Amino acid sequence: MARELLSAEDARILALESGTVRGHTCKVIVIGGERGAEQFRAHLNERLGAVPQLTRRLDPASGASAWEDDPDFSLERHVVDRGPLDGAGLRRLVCTAMETPLDRSHPLWAMDVVSPFAGGRTALVWRIHHAVADGVTAMRMIREALLEPTAGERPERRPDPARIHHGPRKLAVTLWSAARIPRTLRQELGPRAVSSPIDRPVGPSREVAFVDAPLEELRRIGHAAPERATVNDVALSAVSAGLRAWLEELGVPAEGLRAKVPVSLHQPNERDAANRDSFMFVDLPLEQDDPLARLVAVARETRQRKRRHDAETLHAFFRDLSHLSRSLERHAQQWAMSPRVFTLNVSNVPGPPGPQTVLGAPLLELHSLAEIAHRHALRVAIVSAAGRISFGLCADPDAIDGLDLIAHGIEREVGALSRAVGLGR
Image (cartoon, rainbow, N blue to C red):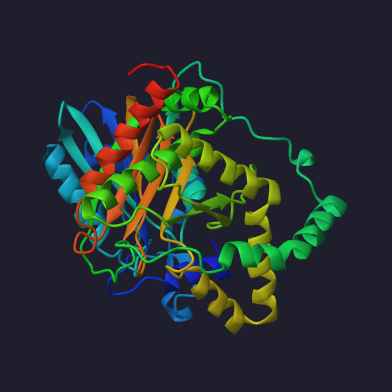
């Protein structure tokens, strides 16, 4: 393909990488049966045309401001056999993967194949740089490069492009958003978060933990709650409980923590943009003792922010500010990343619906991890697939002592919510 400039958002994300902060996300995929690296190379080779991001590198002549086809592209370099591992070995491999920067002289992704993995399965550890793909784009890449819907499943439904709103409605929404910008900036970007043990300088080491639960259980909890709640509300409430348990163990007041929640702005039929998202902030109700009270508080907050279209308003503000002054936009982005504004990032991306296979083997598990940031020493990435929802926790172990305590708190909260709404457990 022709040389292509990075978008302003992709370039900004690339520039966030440093000596201690990596720029990639990581997907851990577990399938039934044993498959080797050579089989995955052959499979990917047949699908490269559908996923051109896999063969593009940063153009060195442009100062990393453009993409170009890698003249030395090799699947042998990107897909590596790591041999057999057990669960503890896989976790160490994932930690190492999150610590190790991707090679900028080649396409910004790498896949480690662990086979056999515990129980006669295969695990893939797939790193993708955030400049190449946000959560929605990365999930689309996984579907197109790896997955095959189980026979008899309906293909993913895509809306008619004619039904996507353009023209006068889009202009009206833009003008409405512009009118709301001052109020939204005060509410969302004002200093609200308090200092916490998560607000620490980060080093190069990483620790990870995973929690998973039945997706249908979270859906039923949301439906049975005193006020209707979404799966994402239930997940945020569980994260709140995990943080509360950890802070109580540390003897730190469980209050004032604020989550940044990414919001995708991708159109369903959009294929080219690597990154197109905004965010909203949610004050986590850690001071609440009762699990249902925590859930209701989260659900009310997210409903309010969706009703006000905060994510769209913030996106319009940063977009228009970049046209006015790149310097002002850069300073505003830096402020929006301040620990005084938010404490930790909690993302939630839906995975492929229905049963899926990879190389003829059933998809059993899909987990996601995202990189931490300066003075945000913990990050939570949530993803759903194969009937399960997974919480992937990534942290600097020198800053966050007790990551497994947070994970156990999340797991306990899902059970407590199930009991509280009469679902048993």
